[in-house]
Image (cartoon, rainbow, N blue to C red; front, top):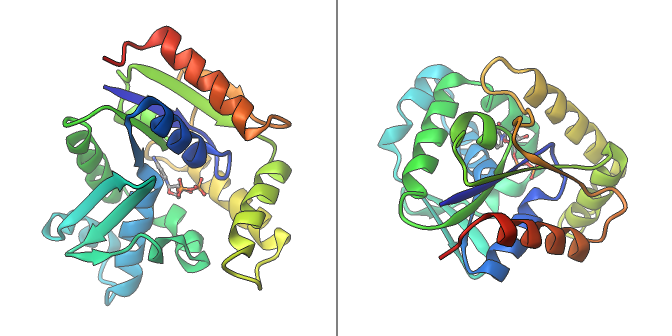
Length: 220
Ligand code: CDP
């Protein structure tokens, strides 16, 4: 059983999906964290040809697990959960995510993971390319300014040098790359329910989506 949320960077998908997962007692799958993890692995490698590097990722023991309200990612036993949230990774992830071999690897990993449990997952192409038969699809959006403000407040806690302009530029450039790439671009699925969170409180949007899920999906 899989519920998906797609949408642009910083639209609140991950935090909303997590809150919904906790309320409904299901698991959360953060597809962006997987793209961030393989980006980190590439940046830390001696940087061979990219297509080839992602082709051979099945040699890396990638593990993902949702517990204690955190989506943990490990590669060959090394915990990457915090390492993938840096500006360095954020600045490279959309380029890496445009490679067909990278997408193939992450998609296969996710399809295997959800076989075992009920998940709510967030990403860019989940309702269109990865899980076209998902039990329910959402598309979350908000204005660029509001998305940048929210993300800036989150990042400022761990990086004092970051500015609102840096964050806005990173979101704008990632959205542009994600929407215009050839392989599985960011796109609303025809059957996705649109949730525009501009001006809505977090609690309001979570409540709205939980109600929609309860009306449309049999979670038992
Ligand atoms: O949380 P935020 O929206 O900032 O980004 P994320 O979900 O961590 O995803 C990081 C990047 O991974 C995105 O900007 C996309 O380039 C890529 N991504 C993707 O291509 N397809 C997905 N299903 C999820 C993420």
